[in-house]
Length: 123
Image (cartoon, rainbow, N blue to C red; front, side, top):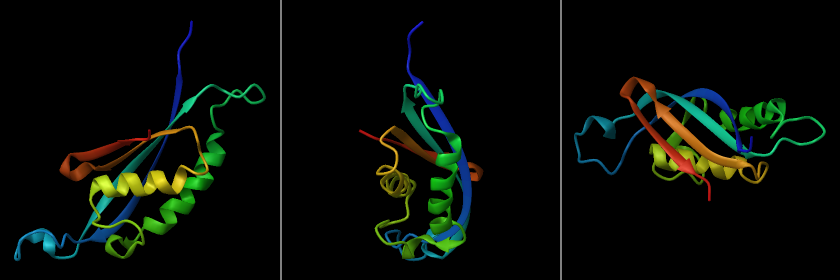
């Protein structure tokens, strides 16, 4: 049987932000916070020496570096993020992890309490 392998690692973080592009008085122009969930997907063939697309321990270590930049931080102050939308968060995380993992295929960022998510497919 042939196919392609996709491995997924998830992590969460808590962060605050505001949206300056909303009309004056809109609730999202005030600082507020969310619990975010992120899913990192990597695709490829398992390596002959270990049978893994990427060793999960390596992925976990890289994610902790990214998580440390986001967790309990003010997203509007993160360099290179821009407006802290789900779209920009997904792209920013992909840009952080992409150089280390050429197997990176997508990053999904969710706000579960709002039922919202964005998936960024890496080209």
